[in-house]
Length: 107
Image 1 (cartoon, rainbow, N blue to C red):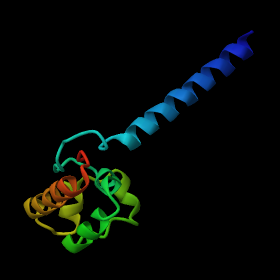
Image 2: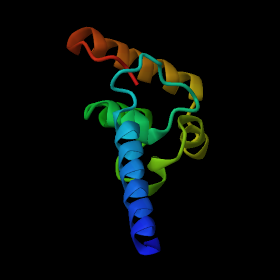
Image 3: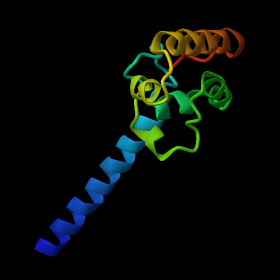
């Protein structure tokens, strides 16, 4: 009986983790929040495949970087000596333009 209870709890835990991970990957698809200093590079990159080129134009070559998963825009700008205000302005302009053209909802 205890084995079945443990097995059941493991299955429930796996299902909850899978649901949570799916919800995180969908974050941004329905939000209208702009990019902020606390937005992770991962969330920015998951917005649109073209945003990677915009980051590169800013000097942030983040698409292949392992730190991109948890690093915030503010941290990335500090590490790469890039002005945060300029990055915020350009990324939000890029995203706003994409939303106008494609009907996306933002990050």
